[in-house]
Length: 531
Image 1 (cartoon, one colour):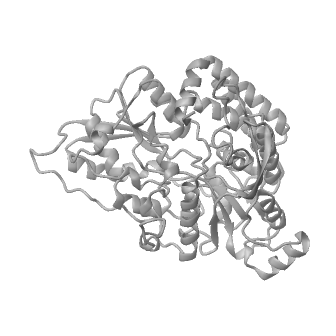
Image 2 (cartoon, rainbow, N blue to C red; image 1 turned 135 degrees about the vertical axis):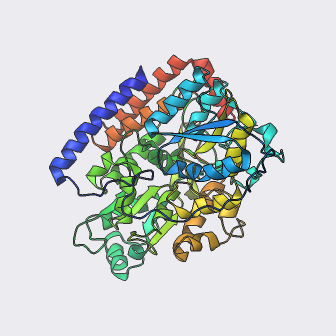
Image 3 (tube, helix red, strand yellow; image 1 turned 180 degrees about the horizontal axis):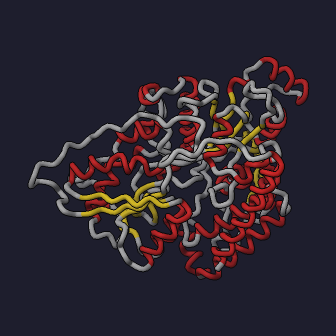
C-alpha cells in the first residue's frame, strides 16, 4: 500500500539525514526529553494547574455510576490536560476514566482501526482535525448536537470560538469536535534584533529599505538572509536566520501550507487549492504551488541543515535558545518562550504570516495582482479536539468529559501555560475590542506583557481573517498529507527539484484517490469545503 511505502521512504530518509548531520557537525549534547511532555528541553514545564470547576457528586446521585470512559490520545503535551482532569471527572460523575496515550504515529491508525472494525474499545479520541473526513465519511462518529444544550452537561459556548477554528468543529452541518486546542501558524521574530540600531543601519545599507517586521515573503527572505550566520545570543557561535521543523512524519507539511496560502488563495479564489471539485484531479502542480515551494526551499537555506530531521520540539529549542531570528509555527512557541530557561522572554514578537503582491487564481489560470498585500489566515495544524465514537458504550459520560475540558476557566489556563500544547482560539482568550478577555491569565502564568500583546494580536487576526486556507478534511487526508510531507522534504533537501517534488505528490494524490474511489472522494471534498 502507498501508506506503507511512504512510511518506509520516511525511515530511509531519516537514516540518511541523521548520519550526514552527525558526520558534518558531530553529535549534539542535549538533555533527555522530559517524560510525558513535549520534546522541548530548553525550558521548564509550567507549574500552573487548571482549576477544579465541579464538586464531587453526592453518594447515590452521581450521573454516570459504574460507567467507564476510555479515551485515546497522543502521548505528548496535548494530552496532559486530560490526565489532569481525571480525578475531577471521576469524582463529579461516578464514572471511571481510562486514558490510553500512544505515540503520535500510532494514534490515528489505532483509532481508525477500532472504528472501522466497530470494536468500540475507545469511547473518544483527542483527534486531529484532518482525521475528520475518514471518521465522518465512514459513519464512525456521534454528533453531540443533542447533548450541547442539555443542562446535565458542563456548558461551553461554540460561538466563543473564532471563525477559522470554529469551522473545524462541525462537518456537514453537524457538530462533532468539542473545542479544546486551536491551531494556526504565525511568524515569530526576535523583537530585540529588529529594534537594534546597529542591525537597522546595516540592513538598510545592504537592502535599501528599513528593517521591520516582514510584511511579504520577499521581505522575510531578506531578513533571514541578513541575520543568518550572525551570533544572535552572545555565545560567539554563528546562528541562523530561521528555524523550521521538517522531520518527515512530524507535520512539517503544515509549514508549506501556511506559506503557500497567499500564493493561491485570494479575493477571486477562496477555495481552489487541493483538487478540482468536479474531477478530483490534483491541483498541487499549479504555478502558484510551484512558486510557493521555490520560496519555501529558498528559506530553508537560511536555517540549520539538521532541521531536516528535527521535530517541532527540537526546532522550538533552537529558537528558545536564542539561535534563530525567525520561526514559523504554532502558538506553543510563544507560550514556551515565557517559561524558565527561555533566552527569548521579553524579546519574542509575533505577527500573522507574511503575504504576497499577487496570487495564482487556478480557476482563471492566471496571476492576479493585488493593491494591498494578499494575506490569508490559516488553521494549519491538528487543532486537537475530542470526538465521540459511534460505538461508545457510554456516549453521555464521554461528552461530559469533553465538555468539561472545554470549560472556559480551564481553557484560560491551558492557553496561557504553554507546556500542555493547547493554543488559544476563543474570544475570551483575546483582548478587547475584538475579544472579551484580559491579560490576567497570561501575566499570572509569567508572560512578558509586550510578548503576549503581540502574540494575541497575531492569532486573533489570523483566525478572524476573511480569507482562510482551505483545510482538507476528506477520507485519506492522512495519506494525502503524508505524501506531501515526504516530497516537500525531498525538495528542501535538494533530492528533488520543486517541480519534481510536486509532480511526485500529484502522482501519489491520484493513486490515493483511485484507491478510495473518485466519486466518493469528490462528494466528500465538495461537502467538506462547501463547493
